Length: 142
Image 1 (cartoon, rainbow, N blue to C red):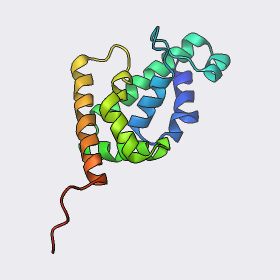
Image 2 (image 1 turned 135 degrees about the horizontal axis):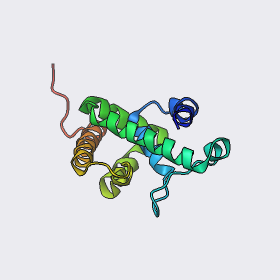
Image 3 (image 1 turned 60 degrees about the vertical axis):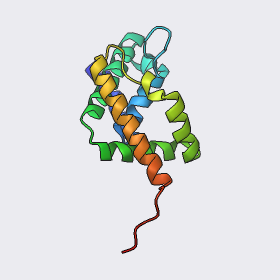
Image 4 (image 1 turned 90 degrees about the horizontal axis):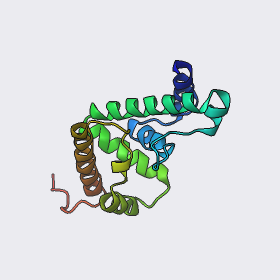
């Protein structure tokens, strides 16, 4: 399993520069009906079971990395993720505020308190990001 997880980290996750992007990507490899992860390339090189476990392990790692991320870094990760999504930034912010897609991106079995902490930080980071897009007050004269 360690070789499979290392493969995921080197070949795929190395191209995703932020813990937020990695967490969301890894969540997208999970079947929401059964909680199992699947990646055709990994499954063909190793086995479905090994691929599933490696993806789950990497998903937990990315989530735990987010737990220790500063708010400012989280704002930067959110901005970079929004820009990489190809969506119009204001539409991205509106969708994230309304749909809160990050709620389904946490690993299965995550401690509810840890999940709530990350959700809260993401809400605050999103509000800061939105404020930076549309400042409400003009800059003060210097």
